[in-house]
Image (cartoon, rainbow over all chains, first blue to last red; front, side, top):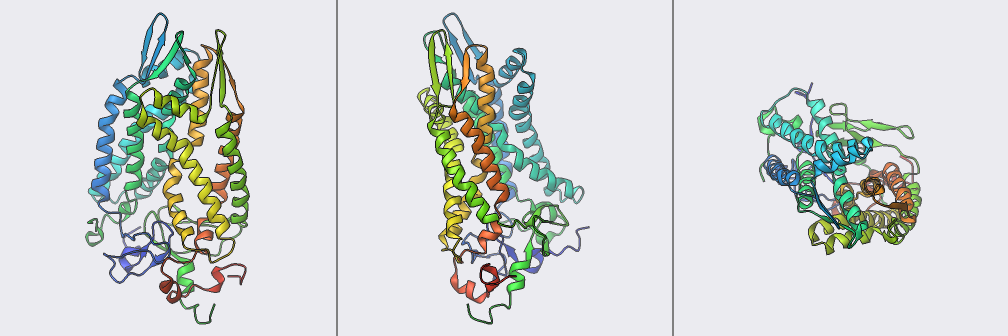
Length: 214
Length: 231
């Protein structure tokens, strides 16, 4: 359904990513700046594929220490307890609040993994110039962008638990090194979603359209 | 506004390229509350929200007041074995910093204090500026920062995080939600309502172009400034 579609790139028109103004620059490959808002105009985001790959690989690397290293260290008079993201979720489940355990599990384990998988799939499909399931891929991309911020949930849980439980010497909670890696996963995948250019999903079947250079 | 500027008006106003798939499309006249979707990828490309700018301004003023309350008042208090403690939003960030997690503390501060504050103040400035079109082009710069900033303002994620933290702590101590928590609850409804009611296109067409030569030659029609003539 998209072979004969009239796109901006075919007619030499560039749409500003910030204000949406459609303009006809003198040279469509060097479009300059948006006359309305002053943003740099781009036909397609610069090196979107390479940059998104780099960001999701970095996020995948950080995902390992984020799950292996402790995120919370509980000191009481008699004991020291170390929690990772997974063990914290299990603890929440055991103490009887399975709804919250489920929310935390979805937000901090499933969403980051699903985001990495979804972005990798979108990239591979674009690189293979696949023309199937484009509509579904476009929807998947919008879902990834919408849902990503919720992974920050655990970082906030840890921040406020730590802030409240400072009852030295009886009990105190310290954040562990895993928090930083976990936050890095969330931030990197959020930036990756913004770096990917969804328009690539749609112009992958015509060679001259695949202008992804700087 | 002089005559003869209406040549390209229809192009500027009615034809857009879908931001998600680059398909050129004509935006039809929308009924109040109506939306246009890209026929190819399903992305929402335009919407008609009557009174959008005024309603958003009212919500933004309310959000600014509630934001201050949410940040000043304690979120929650805790008492255990005869000891009391309480925390504010900033208190959580400071504790994280003092525990040696400076980078995480800065990220948290950005997501729950700086980004929401920027969202509210920039939105307020833009909405006040566009009340007298054409607004100066700095309003456009603020709009660009707003678009970049929006995914990072995470008050609603923070509130869910606080609720989870409360449930975790409830076994260990008596916790009571404070005024700040209720204010944060109101704040997320206000920010959500601001996002829903704001029509960025309505604001953009009231802003003076960065390149005024182009603005003149592109013949921005009087109809783009409602209050002069209708479309």
